[in-house]
Length: 137
Image 1 (cartoon, rainbow, N blue to C red):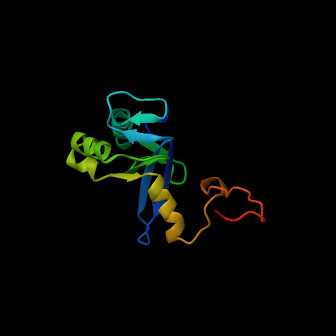
Image 2 (image 1 turned 120 degrees about the horizontal axis):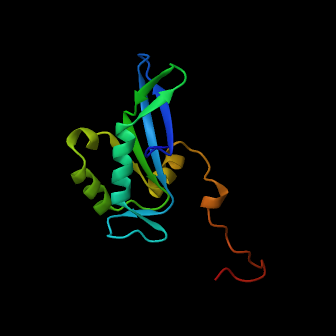
Image 3 (image 1 turned 90 degrees about the vertical axis):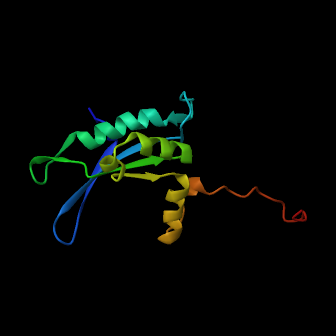
């Protein structure tokens, strides 16, 4: 019953208007290949989920009514290929196309750099233990 949304959030502007975001999160790489692999998701699957996300209402308990998602984030733990972004952009009409934003692994890591936050320990490769008597080459 998620209708394409893995997660939704809202942001209140200084004018007190509220913008709703839907997030579709994928573990691996998003590409435009014909079939989904074990670690890759096909962009056609994302197309169906993005259409559902933008067309289905969500219930906001703070205001006690159903609202539509204003923007959709497609977030991938791997790469989102340029071909996949282009394919999805060509399939969506102009109004829906302007509502979709993409974030892949590099974008997420760059957010840590921009905001000066330390990377999670799992994101940083650990140096191999060395014997201090050995030369470093």
